[in-house]
Image (cartoon, rainbow, N blue to C red):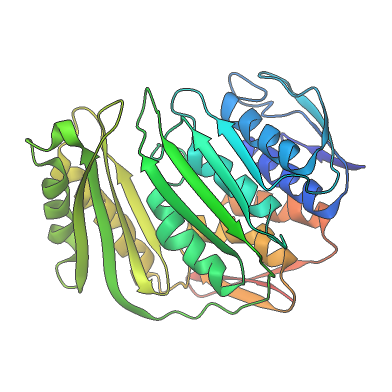
Length: 335
């Protein structure tokens, strides 16, 4: 059984999500202890438990101590037993963090599997947005051989959430890939609830982006959506190499400022000359550990999330990552 200290380094829910997904894939039982021990409150939160239960349902796994607030968890995986599951998320728990856990757990699937998520948020402060998953995360993983699609029925914002999302995962076989940097243009979605349409929130967020990124070729579109709670966000990404940034609207924060902050974040990632942004660099770690052959990419920052993910992955997979500092960039490689 693999032993994982849930308080290691970053010490958050990411350790649990990565461990459960890799346990399912490798068929190695895992014991996770000190779960979020340095956080207040400690232990599993609802969105962590939802991700665990989803993977458990897919793999017909045996679970021990799986409840909200639990600081210790045992997971005993079996074989994939279902090709369709539904996941219920309370309030505005992150749809995207649950989906990323499921995607990793199914990254070598040989059949079509559908996951329907009811509830939760598609945009949140401490998680990737659904637009980031659609336009940065999944297109990059497709280069490695992972095939999945997302269909958004309804978006969800804090506090009520209420999102409805369908994810389809298709037959996949991960192969190593070197991510080269090649940027042709910047795309984006400026999104807001329909009850903010009169205030032109989506359009004003776009104006903020233009203030920062006026020298680039831009293709940003406004979108007005039905939601249970009002909210706004803007997501930006580059093509052909996918590098992303986003910013979430808040009460008291001008829409133009939201767009400007997203533009500043993306520009920071672009001028660094890395082939991934720091968030993608972290999220790719477990997938490339499973990919046959060499994988390599660069990023401007080696975050604690990335270091933690590498530590967890090397507990399950008999491969070693090589990190090299190259001027202002970090090169992440596995062969």
